Structure formats: structure tokens, C-alpha cells
Length: 126
Image (cartoon, one colour):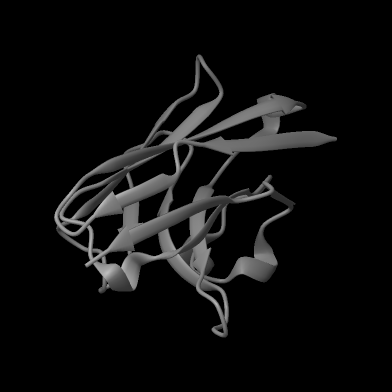
């Protein structure tokens, strides 16, 4: 069993920054790809970013590319999402997810992740 706990969300203004954290506990040794997803009210969950075990490969949704940065500290079993130049359309509940296996080119598919956090709310006011 793996538990993921997100933190760092909040209410900010357009152009501000936030850093989300995702702390993993449990059977973390088998962690592979870590991902961030988000869901806005009335919308489907969407992929935001992902990072492979080594941290060498990162992937981003076009809507956040150049503004968000995903990283991880395997020694701390923690993944991060640095969000800069936030926009009102970034408002959503953000979830981190973990895959036990390498996802290859399917990193954007939420259904392939094994474990999910409870989410943290990010609200960007205009």
C-alpha cells in the first residue's frame, strides 16, 4: 500500500506562484513514474505533468509548458510541482499519482497510475 499526500495549494492571484508537494509513504521503493493531474469544476480530470523515476524525463501538458516544472526527490519520496505565472484557468483540484511501472508514452493516461492522493485545491483569482 502507498499513501500520497499533497500539500501546498491555496488561493493566489494571477501571475503568482505556488509549489505543490506530494509525499509518498509505504512501499515507495517501487515508485516509478510520478504524475500530476487536475480537475476543475464541471470538467474532466486532465494530465498536467509527469516525471520518470530518474527524473531525467519530464512531460507537460501544452497548457502548462514553460510555466510549470515537475521534479522529485527520491531520497525524500516526494514529488513537486512548481507553478509559475498562474492563470485563472489553472484553478482546479490538483492530484498527484504514482505508477509502479514505467509508462512509456502513456504517462498522460490517469488510468495507468496505481495510487492517487486526495488532492489539493489551487484557486487563482483574476
